[in-house]
Length: 272
Ligand SMILES: [Mg+2]
Image (spheres, rainbow, N blue to C red):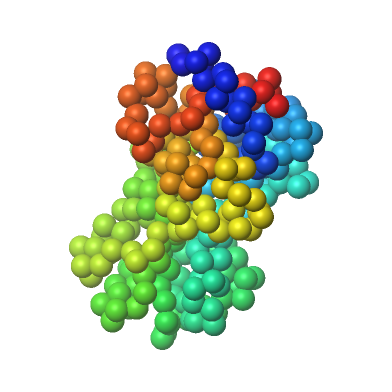
């Protein structure tokens, strides 16, 4: 356990952090259970003047749905925000494809989020294609998407996780859809918005109006959460409350190595 060796570094990291980006499952809750006294911990972080943004790659649910769940668990404060890879894709489109018509393979919740941001959805003759975590995916949508890819339309994916964390066997996520479409069309996404790439990180930092080094990413997955922080110049805190244990944390490649490790985010309280 390197916790004591990280003490000074953690103090410095927390000292310069204005915004904590928090992963959800494995970091603040597991399933429907908050991890330890997380409600108290998050309240202490807010009282220290720091902002909390819950940050997830899951583009199948709306930010409001996550906020509702977090509120129910007592984990959501009035100034907190939720940022999904679906929102990142919508913001990316507004910045880079303004006024263009979009074919979205995504849930009804994400379609509403796109529409609320003024993005015109078009299933017949779009300018750009977006692949999200569509839990109502149909053959018709796949075949249409494949046709638009063959016609050379720009191709954006919300994220590229191969599977979605769940109880029992993990179901296929967007990364698996990407492989299917690579097989049929020969194309891979031109842009992937979510963790661990730079798109969502850049959008978040500018949305929050802070410098990269004033942001700290906290998560339990080294190859998405920690790599995301490292790729974007954020501070990085790995928590051992989810899918990574202390032994695995010792053996990470440089790209996925965090600046600090905590047993859970609850241990942040003494550094605030
Ligand atoms: Mg997680």
